[in-house]
Image (cartoon, rainbow over the protein chains, first blue to last red):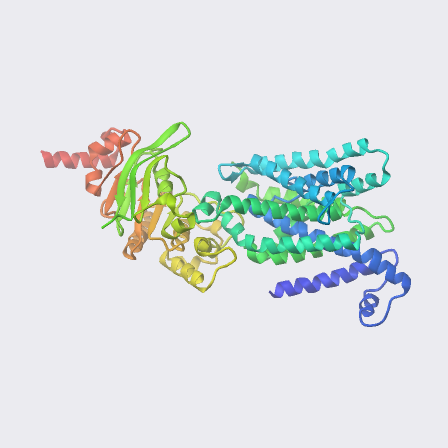
Length: 333
Length: 259
């Protein structure tokens, strides 16, 4: 509980600092005092409220969504190497979103754009394929999981380039595609932020009762079944919620690798593997982590920016290799 | 008195291979039964059929006068617990966190563990005598300690019938005896015990009845003395008595008596 409060405070501090960072420096105190009746100048208002705040909030949403879905997929596969990017779920979402942008940009369904729905569908379908390839006799074959995930992820991510060839006239689509593939957190519209934020909260809410079941699934499918758990339903539920979270993250930030891998792992080091306790901590920690990462990505080489997805690849890659090395022994056949 | 569990002409096979052919036996409540037989005879399969994780192809498994397949799995899980040979736990779960999973059949859709669940876990840890291990990491325990944790996990289900798949496998002789003592203790606490045991020496004196499962024979049941006949064992294990010290010893003893 104390940890959660601590993380909340940290999140607020990090958000403040992130708002203050950029080409125009506005001190955190100035931003803070604006909440207590010392208004910012008109320029500062535009920079903070219309440019930086949406982006900072978007990175918090992306971080939390990736971290929770990473936690769920790791629990489902009983393996700390699973992550929405590694197992191809993000790639599926990107492909789905591209189909949406290039072919169905006019359609919407109950207020959700076709893009968002197709991103979700792409993620679910990819997960179903990777999952069925990697499972045999109630066990996950780790090597098959990683290879199938890698193949799906690469294939789906880059197959998005085909849409560009089909639709070479549109420059804006090209930019969207590029930013997705590199993992750039853009400046979302407030409406987009509201919808994805709501979806994140909804998914976290549905995920809450699943956490206990992830603990039971850790004993293996057969044992979980013997304990009276409806294993099939639980798995489908986890895949759906995990894919929804991936789609939320992809729709705001594209392909961001390894955040869903590192965050649950570090949280597990602090708290142990009990998913019930991990969920809130992982979500908050993920948000903090990505706000920091995105702030770094736009300020290390200021005035130019690097995509946060590329920064994460450099941070996460070595971490993934370290994990692979550390856990190698237990996955030898 | 009606038996707690009965098999009536139960058959089961994996794809093209028949494993259990027309097995029939009764387990009385409060009994302590050993299941013996050669490798590959289907001991694990038989236990899984009894726990309801496998469905028999023909025949009927009856638990408490009701057909097993009529129960919801969680209702079976409140009466029958199966302690498997192997339990692989990913991540660094503590002993207590592992044992807590035994409460799953008592939890509702949204209802998490309550006081009574914590008490049941405490009791299970106490029965298996691993209270002091509860905060240790499961994956870092020794084989004998893990065996006790698996039993505690089963006990947290508060079962009437405890099924154990080769509980003495890979244990040294001291841990084997400790484990048999634990089974005795649980038996005296009113839990019906049904365990597959590969070490025939552990059976007489420790179990009230025995079942012999062999690929070439129908399932036989009886007292340990009736089942541990050299001629029967020789046939079931397909092994000449001279090659097996226990069989040899028993054969000689019988020959002496006869002579």
